[in-house]
Amino acid sequence: MRTLLIMLSLSMFSFLAKGQNKWGFETAVNTLLKGSIDTIHSVALLEMIQNERVVLLDARQKSEFEVSHLPGARHVGYDDFDLSVVKDIPKSSTVVVYCSVGKRSEDVGAKLKAAGYQHVFNHWGGIFDWTNRGMEVLDMNNRPVKRVHPYNELWGIWVNNYEKSYEPR
Image (cartoon, rainbow, N blue to C red; front, side, top):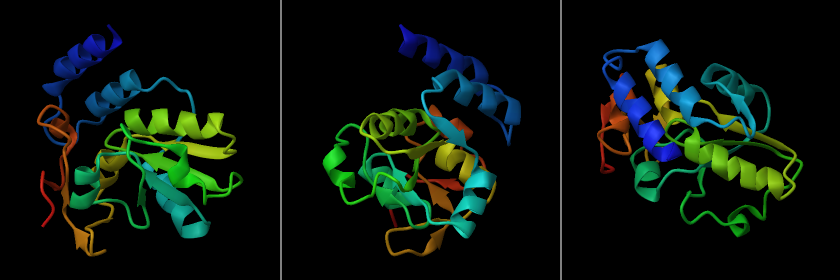
């Protein structure tokens, strides 16, 4: 039922998605998130990355990660996420998990918190917010690119400033 309500909410707000419609995007993201872990917004995350040691975990599908990802990010997935892939990360580390908009990353972040990780944040708005603000993403060869995987056509309405690409190049 919650999924149906989310999809209806997204459809209702999709007409607001032309350009950078801050209100529509914020409403959609806030509808999806449960508030189960602390969030960090893109500008604050960029500042955090520049000023301290942060572990960035990408909770998207591998195909999404291969199109582009945040600099320094490590793919951990969502459907197949397993705590064994992060066993090398000290539980005292600052960990920020992101996905497209913050839903999948919130779920992965909650699993990390439950496993004893002390400083876990969910990147609010995910890579969509990051790229809509013009912040750098990299391809698999660590080259800056201006494209992002939109997850699917419906979610792609929130990708505004970068090319939408389903395949890495």
